[in-house]
Length: 168
Image 1 (cartoon, rainbow, N blue to C red):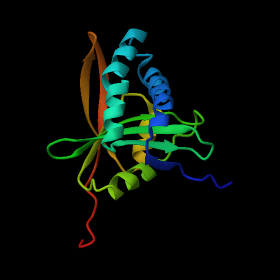
Image 2 (image 1 turned 45 degrees about the vertical axis):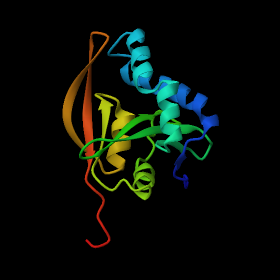
Image 3 (image 1 turned 90 degrees about the vertical axis):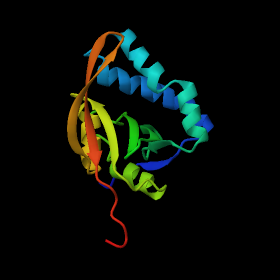
Image 4 (image 1 turned 180 degrees about the vertical axis):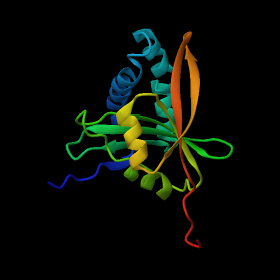
């Protein structure tokens, strides 16, 4: 059976409430076994609060991946670092055994002009999120430790090489 790939598009104002719900669910799934619920709330308030989402929305740096059934499966905030582009992503699969394909997100990011290296961090053990990055061609990198409200959160940085130019 053919499953249409997710459609990746710029988020709209009327998506913000659903994006917040997806971010909360995905962060709870990713961090819930490692840290208390209050730490998950802190993570969301730092990375996915409405002001941050709105800022990215206005700058056209907030993307969502929508499944064929209309569910938001992926949220990505795009930010520039000195030598690469950072994607802050959450993944909320339609079905727990099927991670969405990350390739459409990379294609969309590349089509918007971000041709350099890409990075994204994933909580260790978040299998769906790791599979999403693998499907997009990212390679696993270093493990970093964040401290959130005094609790260590282990994340792996995932890296994708720069896009090839038409010249070669």
